[in-house]
Length: 423
Image (cartoon, rainbow, N blue to C red; front, top):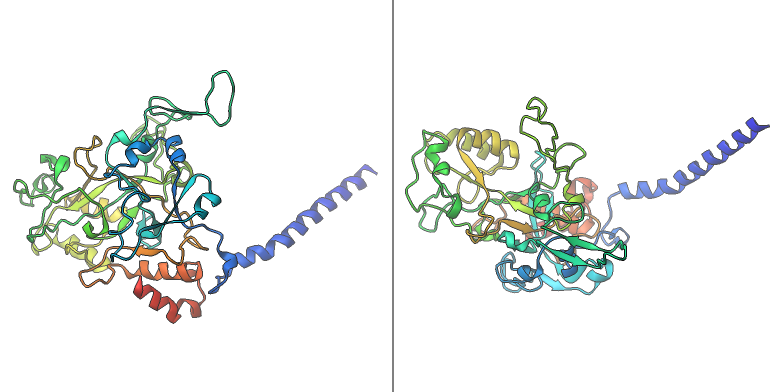
């Protein structure tokens, strides 16, 4: 009798699971079908909005510093001007639905959508981010903050930052240091001279081209390129962002052994993921540059420059476009043909050491709003340096999907081509 009862219960459980799968399966199938023009039912991803002051404070950023001119925070500064390409295009608008959808947001919706490459080695033009503010010194990070804390009353809403550390015992600066953005500033100066080192704290003997590759000439004094702005007009090629780094697949480079055979790069207890731990979507900027003028067609770096240029094309400086970490680290830096570094954490360089620049976790299904616009590097004639960004942006804006996910008839439609051309 007990066996029959057990079988009966098992039958009921199996039937219940089967019924659940029957109900869910149509929804799963529907999600795999590319959306069609005008299908508002698939618009479930909200467009990006700035964070509220409370959320910034609770996550380690001093809004007193954030609301100053050097930070150029969207909502207070830069409503017009770069990254917008014309004087009538706004970079952000007031939108009262932002805070209604998410109380951790303020009613400033971001229209300027910057394109970049993921740091996963693919070189795809699929990352879209919102450069909401620039962090130019460590003083932007809070050292102390307390909200809703009473030592006599336990509270789940208590937020306490002590000695820069959050309740997990980790500072926001430490978390952000694991997630790099790679700005490629122009090295060709207005007078036509090519500067092989950045100005400021990175203009050191160790970064002299001849120190990196003895076959290169030493750089004359004061021949450096400015680092004061990472606005798009100052870039020679588009960004790269380490959105892919996480603790699940090891891309966070976490390694907790002192054995050099286990951890050849040293001990690193940083089990962080960008979309898990970097709550403000911040980045530390890793500036990178070339050490040889590409106009020198017979230098020690000419061969590798031409190889990469034939693969991806050339930047506004005439240097090759670089899409992956492997190309930068192993093809270029390993032979002294490129170098990278970070600005002075104290703010002495005057440029952006960090960015508050959240990547859109899933830019599909409504995240790219109809009034958003694409921000990428342009050639002097106005054409984009990498048209793949324009195509993906158009497909996302019109259909809510990447171009590779569309039906052939959708991807080849005149609407996509005309929108991509106008972005």
